[in-house]
Figure 1: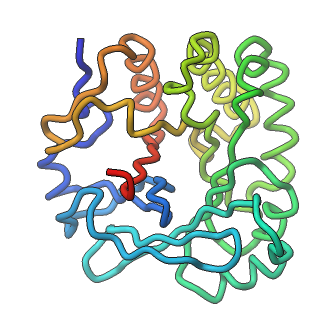
Figure 2: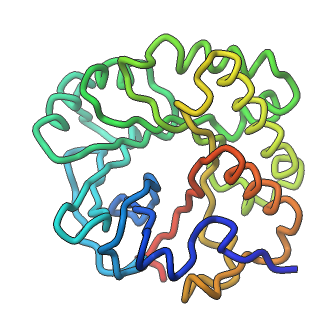
Length: 249
């Protein structure tokens, strides 16, 4: 069984008429998917990539022909990283509007307070079993990593795990959707449902075919697991996020 990419809102017609904006880092990692009308004619092609400071990568997002937007991934596995306040000040001097963190470093989240910059935070893969099995752990995670900072820090998305579906860990794969549901429920209980979205980040390998988007399909080996994740995205209005790695395409 193949799941049509149209479930994730990637119809070719919508690309031309009501395109959802996709913002990537220079490694090709998808940072954010947001509504942006028209003007986009390319699909994972031809971006202008470059470095933006130590440990930060910047990419061009094809949102509108005349109004390009930028976002970065703020990696922290590097030497001589600037302190968070310096990073925030640097970002404010640019056109960068969104930042993805692989984790939920409170120093960076605090430093970005009152900047208006959208922040994507994430849970570790190792936290997924606990999030899936214990709703109280999910509430604790939200109470620790989101509530103390929001809304001063503009947290817009929580990614539950990274590339779990291609990890070959069947137990972890089975727990991904319950973990996302518990995180969503914790946000709802904190009156943050709809304000902060929940998703996960996939490897491009979950797709069997990606071009043209109207003929796209997921690898059938992911079956009902992927269907459940897509239904979650659709029900909660959260983005389908993917790490495409175009340099290896």
